[in-house]
Image (cartoon, rainbow, N blue to C red; front, side):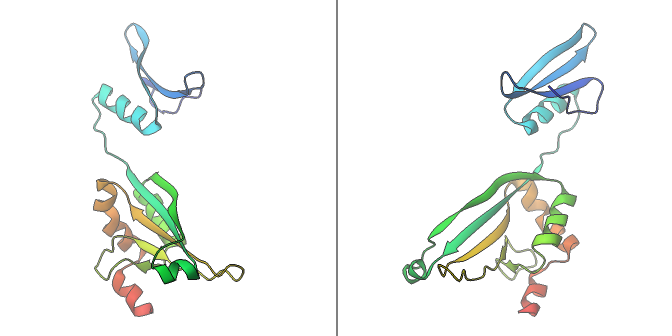
Length: 165
């Protein structure tokens, strides 16, 4: 059980026996177990609320993929689609770094100043002829609110993408 918090009046740790996160608060009587949570974000939110500290919801980002084969293209469908990862928690800085490293030359979903998502065009697989594309999407309201600023901070705009084409 490793403490995952820097504050001295709160312990947040993963309890292997219950497979959950535990929030303990220090009181005049000693340490008391406040709550047990299934996700680390819930544990931090619970600790913040118990201490009266304002809680800011994290930004959640999804990375999806699609695969198109010649046959699925004739039918106007994807042969495969899904999430590479879903609701991955990102700070603003982490999102900007991901955009700069992986999505700088991606295609925008539309030509507005802040496209809804970005897609990395796939290359044709020479063995089976399929094309796999990967897209990045804001998932929750906070991520959608900060998405345009993250795109700007990373130097990505739909107009720049259109000029490259």
